[in-house]
Length: 132
Image (cartoon, rainbow, N blue to C red; front, side):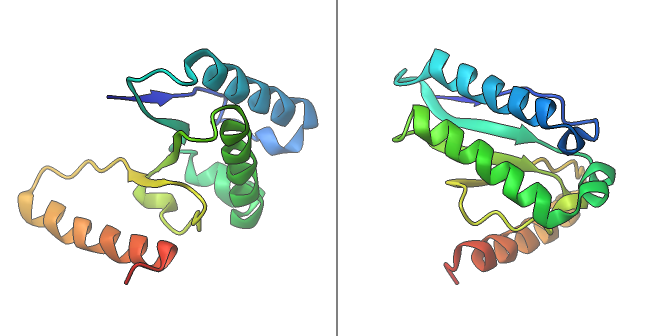
């Protein structure tokens, strides 16, 4: 199974320009359309580590709404597919309960630190999805 990463320009202040956001939506739609229904697709990653400086610049609520619009675009093309956003510890506060999978890139080399952080991520997931 494959997690299909759908790339877009996330390292710039993209929400300031409607053409940029429209282009990002087009890229997501096009990427999902190319893979829709393929049996090897585990999920689509509609974003990966938007930098914390960009999230702070636009504000977390605006960023969450943008990610949700990407989610809806992907689901419109392939409604039965799983859709994820791949987060990073510096923006773990983003509230994304609509995604099908909660994903984090974690770069901890110490087993103890990794174990502690995984427990934290479990708490974040339980809060976001109400599974606690």
